[in-house]
Length: 174
Length: 436
Image 1 (cartoon, each protein chain N blue to C red):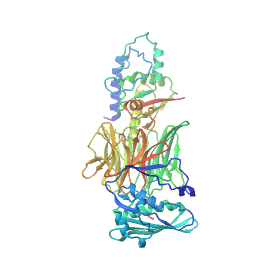
Image 2: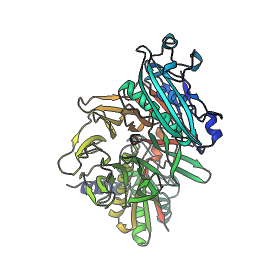
Image 3: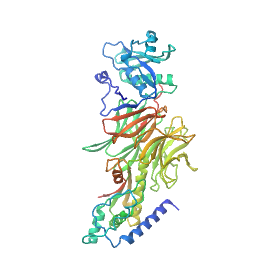
Image 4: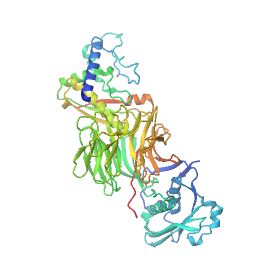
């Protein structure tokens, strides 16, 4: 089986699981999903019970579309389930607006060697690309670039900074 | 004890023969050799009317001390200052414990031209080890001094000196006007730093061509990685790969005609290819759904060492440069081994070895497959061998700041190279210059 097929199937399984869980429970939090480095918090986002009035579908979509960064675990390009809703919203937006273009910028934390990190950043961007395409975005709308560890958002040399630097950014071109 | 070597003489600045670089590298010896050979380098005689154009003996002394193989005798301790072998009273130097004494002269020959003459003498055997007469212009004096260091080093250790070589490296600064990336080359002693190119987007992976006239590197323009080859003499550059996705990790083939590179062209997965710089003809070397990157050639151009995570995490493999066959895995110790660089004698690979929270430079013996860790930083990366195999330069952090460091392959000597012009990283040691 090809690697692409493995990824595709894995992504589908994750998405199906996430659909069943999240469909009726909109996430209230307007903040971006917090990067995590541990398994214990994975998948927690989106399941917290709403404590205020429920958001309209439109408000919810707007919140999800405002999220432009997907975070990753160390040396991993696996998309965590807490980013499923956000990616689905972006994919839908792209499907509905065929002229829209988005650049997927992959990044790694500073640990290890720079060129391997370039490859890792590209793999992360490709993983995001696959998900967006599976959910309706067209390949012509998507491009990837990897900056590896060259463009950190956080300059610290600790776990907190690294978690924020292992990311893919969605950059919409106007 | 910390020896500081800032070998800029005042006379050099007064003569204004070299532009003052905005960000010189300062080399500091952070750990000396176990016991270097005691050597006395007597200030060179000067017969000109004006101030001496360069303290040649000081440049030679700094070179030899940095190697860790020599322990220079202080000038204050010298009881005599001969400038020719015939004037040397060996008892003066035996008394100081010096095993080698170096004497020399700088003689003006015309406007801006000189003749350097030096002799290195064996104190106990009372005989000359090496000596030469070297013509020089004012601008060539530092190079002539490094050449003297090379000759002395080779005559005594049997290994060719690497003092006439250069280091390429990348600096990064966050300025008010935005991010600034620069590619530099400097002499191996940190002097004569000059900017090769600069950009607002990242520059990385400088690689010297085998003859030392060109650098290949990766640069970003308009959010797209581009591989360039730049002529150092003229500054002229050509792009050699502008494919979509990853264009990275250039490594020159020994023939100087081809580059091994890591591209994600075909399917978004990074693979190793060989590209002919003249014709742009592309040949695929690896074919695996994992990441394959960071190629390094064997001297005969038949094999390519590289990093692959086909086993789950990054490990070092070697493949046939013409493709085909199954690459052979070389590293098994630990879960992270990346970015191989072959030693000049092809017996060792320098690599980045990750263990727990630390990433250090390891040296893998290709025969015994034993791995020795030679650095002690937390996030060390980008190892590059000196062309004589004596030292490995690499990038490390000093109080969170990017600096360069060099270590003897046996770990005995350590140096730190810092810059006033921001964080520095990705050092690449040049090949030997053409023989004089």
